[in-house]
Length: 140
Picture 1 (tube, helix red, strand yellow):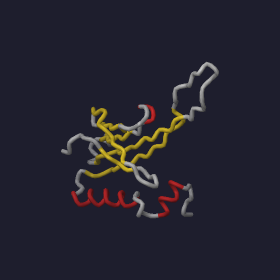
Picture 2: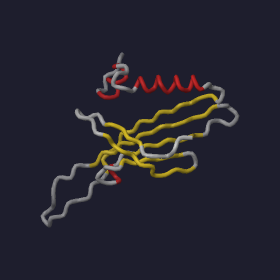
Picture 3: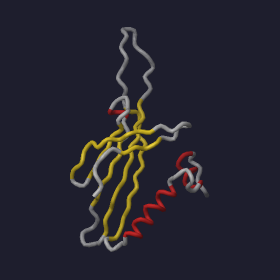
């Protein structure tokens, strides 16, 4: 089993910046990491890895990977007394990937599934997917 440690991911800025995620919590098959460099825990990106139950006796296993990217309200200055309100959550963007696999699947089949998904979600992946997510332009 892989050790529970830090995860580094690059953002999509013109000059990519590495963001380090530290282990936060793990129990009942659910693991969480939180971004270290965030201004507050409210603004921190969270990664989750879970093993979820599938119908008993089905021979299936579900592994879920989730990323939550919070966006804070923009604070526009102080009141006449010099008070500036604390930031609050405006909305969150999320992505969830579920891998549903038979317990009979081979290592090669599981590796292929992971690789296909990784390629589909990279900068060199398919424009139809990228345009739908980033621009809201659908291929039909």
